[in-house]
Image 1 (cartoon, rainbow, N blue to C red):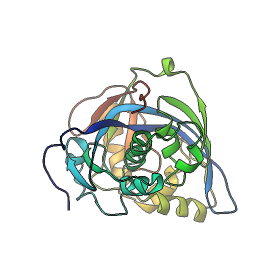
Image 2 (cartoon, rainbow, N blue to C red; image 1 turned 90 degrees about the vertical axis):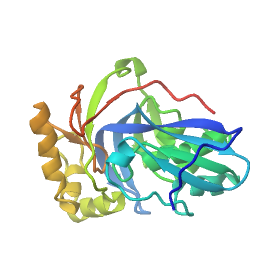
Image 3 (cartoon, helix red, strand yellow; image 1 turned 45 degrees about the vertical axis):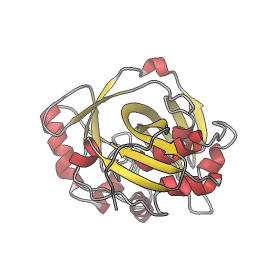
Length: 261
């Protein structure tokens, strides 16, 4: 169950920023079923915080956008990416997770938490990107420190882009009170014969097929800002460039690279 309480004493705290996928093209499917992509990603200043101390177990405090999004309790068993990352590195720790990034929202919340574990454990940010990819296609970007990068392959190939081009740029997010399964969206993309999205994201048509309620939230953000929203990754978050505070909208800014723990 999700528990409340202060972080353990003498804990090492690691920041885990969300990522925003500014564009996403699906370029093919590997023989093992993994989809190949070409994406532009940027880290933003919405972040979880993980505190590591001696012991074992995971406790989660949900606050901020993760709480207001209306999602249920975050699992604290072996299915959580924090637990899976600890298993990958063969380490044990008591982890106190302050969860601010909504789950299932296409913002890399689970992946960035896993990457924070790998940084804490001393995984090299270059040599272990492929291993990190076994946890999820967004983990390599998050492990490499975020910032701004072109992401290709199955997520493990990173080409750094100028951080100066995006640093401080604002984006407005609207997170519906429901998540979208990434696996289901990719299955729908396959079933639709690989559509090409007309709004910088090839997964939008598939996501709208999996979760038709997304359309109303897209229109809600578009009508309130006068901009054309884009889907963040496989959803469920919609975003536009610029700052449009108010209502349930979340304004974030592209942030600096994340220093190693």
